[in-house]
Image (cartoon, rainbow over all chains, first blue to last red; front, top):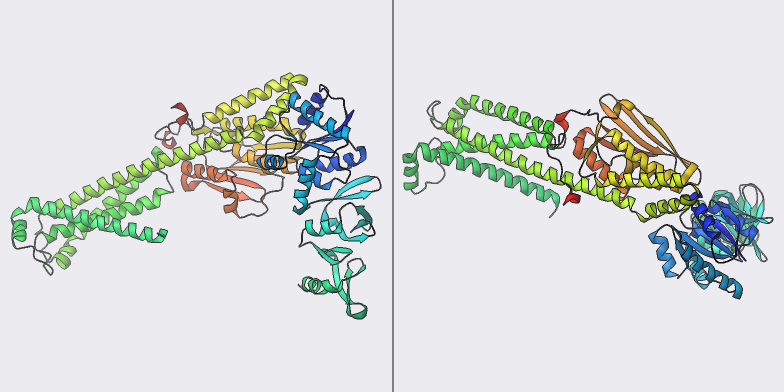
Length: 248
Length: 378
């Protein structure tokens, strides 16, 4: 039994796929439907489906953004597209499985059979791994935070600073609370907007809008004061870079 | 070669041409009226400068050049002034050009002739009234200037026709491409596939609207001018189809002055604007997006606005918007070809605004002189 989640912003497109899923050869269970990428991420996290049928062109978070934000373990994904030269090129480059609209029963059957085989062998989808690897440089426009058992999609500008602790990275929000995210601090530093976040320490990545003051600390080092009174240490080798940006 | 140099050279060329044509006219008249004197001049071994202007054949040549240059410059001035204000595509514009040219040319002719006693005294040194061929020279160069004016206008007209035909074809091509744009077409087909089992009536309706929209677009270059009402009907078909896809996500709010529906407009004027709003507004916003379609009268003008509550143009530079393949450049070009400088397209922060004169039907003066041929028929 394949557990499936449908993601498409157009109600009729979901209706079409829902109808087809009732007629496919494979045994499938439709566990949830999402009308946007933002809705899809917590649902995928919650239901842990085997397969996500994911539309590429959606406002806000598109299909690729959703792949970026999914926390591991990741489900299998079959992309659905009406036609988008850019997306199709990405699919072809990474030999990804994708369905074109209007989706045909025959084509859907073939994809489901392939996914069933992968699930049975518990094999990972190498093509999808390649896509993820290729996106390691692409900018992150949103983030996912773990709020208890739920995942929440957040705008980067809601975050005051990130803190790396032991094995997790905590995002401290302006609203005061802190939640873990599955991204590493290295990933965040390289993929978030460089004009918005500044790495001041091995363990800290700070939103520039939160920075208030630089003050001396012991033995010639400096510390950074934030808008809420938090003081964060600055690595010795990053002092110059921080000064340059703060004084600008 | 830089454009300015090119312009300058073309001006120089035109002036040379004026002088040569004028001189030839004068020479011709001189030849006909005073063959003996001319012959004497040639027999004398073509004496060089300085020579008294009163001596034949300089006198007629001088008059020829004077009249030719004045007439021709006047005509070029009139044409330059009226060229973009009244594109030579409609009978009314043609009348404006003919009347303006005639008035100005007659004015200059009369003026020059009135100054003739002075010209006689100061330049040719001939006693006034002792220049029997003056009238002939003037009339011949006037005629030649007129002939060349007509020729220039024929070329203008031909070029304008070509340009109008080209932009009409580009508009049709763009609209067709947008409709068989895989994204639009496949999404629409996908909607129909979804509807066909559950809501066959709605599926049928969408197919009909799609067919009519295609038909309208295919005929656009054959009917370059339509009524505002027809254009709105086609736009509504497009909206019905997109509404099937986007459902409540797309809200259309119309504020249309119904007394303007009979206005003449170039075809495929509104639908590309709404399509832009859908492409860049509705399909890019997570929340429901409203498109406002407003058509109002402002004095003798029609003001047509298409705005949306999507992300907007973000104060982008208009040149980059025109270049970005939004189809706005084509809408602007066709508007100006149709109405000249009386029409304009403005880019707002959240949409586009068109201004153009209200032209009611039956106004034959503003109908195109020649129906543009359609390549589709060939």
